[in-house]
Amino acid sequence: MPKQTTEVDRLVGVRITALRKAKGLSQTALGNAVGVTFQQVQKYEKGQNRVGAGRLREIARLLEVPVSAFFEDQTGGETSDDNVFGFLSAQGAIELLRAYVQIEDEQLRREVLAIVRSAARLGRHAGAATGEGSVAAE
Image (tube, rainbow, N blue to C red; front, side, top):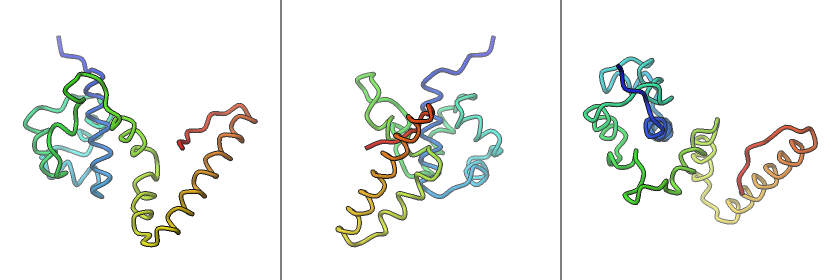
């Protein structure tokens, strides 16, 4: 009987996705670099297939992170990084962060952050008024 994937496999996939996007790599480019198809990378990222130890080590090398970056902390609980990886997988999050860090003026950065926070609040209020949920963080 084949082994089923677990929550750990899903979390590893979420982290692969976030780190791959942060490096600006496509699924095809990552797949080519580690010797699998982009479809296989998709399955890893969705947690549908387990990533073998050797392949995970190669992915970590390509993404320039330690293998431990894909797992929970040593205490067995989820780290606050799990929230970060979840946020980074949101559509446009990586692009928003890249643009933000290119702003050199600290005052302008604070103002941009205030605008984004206001937009998030407005989105939450509009979602509450229509009965729809909106994902936003402050």
